[in-house]
Image (tube, rainbow, N blue to C red):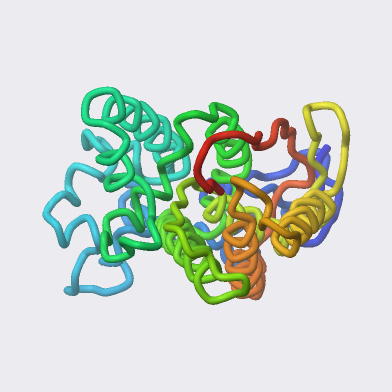
Length: 305
């Protein structure tokens, strides 16, 4: 037995929508009857999967999307060598985080800390290094293993759910834009807010982007039940509120919370909450419970988030 994501009716033999993955009763089983957001992820005139990266189905004769615009659309369609990445962006980003972590250590060992900072950390004295706006999102403190582990756990559990609901393309934009703005916002806060930071400030980590994903999911289903450390059942809104309160407390405290960029957490969360409200108007639903464990640790020599 399962509850319909649309009307809440309990069904003995529910239907699972192949577009969005939701569970529905007989009345709402068709995509058009539950305002299925997954329809935006499919170009299916002949049963071939196509994600939101390809707009050709909605724009006949027009550009066929981001991937086709750069000449690789054919290899990302079903059956192509890169087909996995359609609909699996959250797992792709998870892999990129760990690959970047390995690359960070290689650069430190072979080229030194200075080159590492220029490649992977967003710095207040070198904001013009625009590549670090993105690389810093995937990079993590190389001296704090729990930094990347905590972010990985949240992305692994929450990322795919949000991606299925908003679409792969929107997830890419949300993750990258919120991560970059969180880092830049933190740099700006250390310069503009009293007392101003006089020495150069560096920041790296995916927590700003992770918090935006968390914010979207919290708006879509604040009562989603998660199992903290796989044991303690709590509603998602309480989990999000707890992290927000901690971030606000340390952001306002003298010293700004040590090595953790709490301002970046808050910026990412606000972006996620605002975008979540936008998505919620489309009638998007999420599961009723989720198993989740872990949390970011402390340590490391530079600001991380």
